[in-house]
Length: 246
Length: 251
Image (cartoon, rainbow over all chains, first blue to last red; front, side):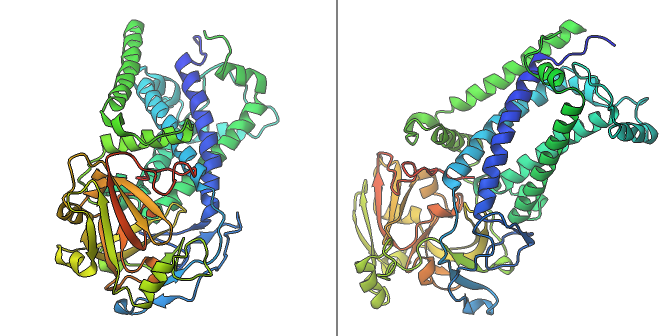
């Protein structure tokens, strides 16, 4: 194998994206706390049925509403009620820090994407070669991750099969999904690009997909961290941060 | 081969940086809201600039079929005529409410040639617009309703908006207020709504008239309208920025 250490631009973008992702996770959780109900469809609120609710703040099932009054012209199933409950809401800084971190993530992500594409990084280091890709090999690789002594990590991008597939899913599916569903919650963006609303089955569906995509990214982060620790924490961290480049 | 790679990477970074630069120079920062040194407010301004620069400012917010109308919670102030609700109580409003808003009139002042008061009859003389749109709350919920009202653009034109005008502040009887820029003020869906789902605007949703800004998050749509002030300078009408909230909320 030739020299395989992480390139400088990979290290830099990895660092910025890691920090933005952590900030997005914290602020995203704070935003979710102010309305921990998720829906499917075009719209959803305390007066419509939820897909599910998360018991993560005092707003969970608070029922603090005045008696619902029906809109008479609409057959009586559509109602209005005023909220009398003082909800938990830290979205002033929650939302602004979420979007600030999102700017860092989107711009750095775009630079990463362009550089990764044109430098051949994706093709060379992430796309599994035709010879290495088979179900049997994938299974063997999967099993090897649970051995007492997992496959040793190198100092750079000599990735295993499963690792390549996972990174590709994260880069080309989960991140675009979480960003696009985020856009779909914006009234100004969907005014210009209404196809987003159709693509994700409505604004509240997009919010729910955003939640699941973010959860999947968190799960990835967790497994990523476990593998970093199991294959040599110090060496791995040095390799992706301040370790000497090749 | 290797040399080739090096050039395209550099070119890639250069392209990225120059497009980011182009975004910054798109000429929007002449009249940006103040940040008071807060990095969060700088991010808000960047979003404002980017959305104004990259999105179509004439595009209409998504409109829905009537069958998509949902129940609609009223949050924030829900009765400025109730003395028990001290934060939003307004005696004048209580009197208007007692008379079923017959004496209500909307004041318009500032950078307009004809400042004055507009009664409900005056507003109804201007063309009306009906739209079924989604109210997107910053908390995370949303609701769809049909709104009918007078486009703010028509009122501003009727009052003779002056060439130095830059922002429009809207004040409610509930001690709440917001300001918007002229792009939103003249957006065809920005209306002064007096009818919701075919009936007079319910008390909790801002009777008798509320603002609808469909291209922004819900809290820009001031309820219980009392006064409109057109200004040439930026006004942080509800202390959004000082209170730690974003002034522009396209997302």
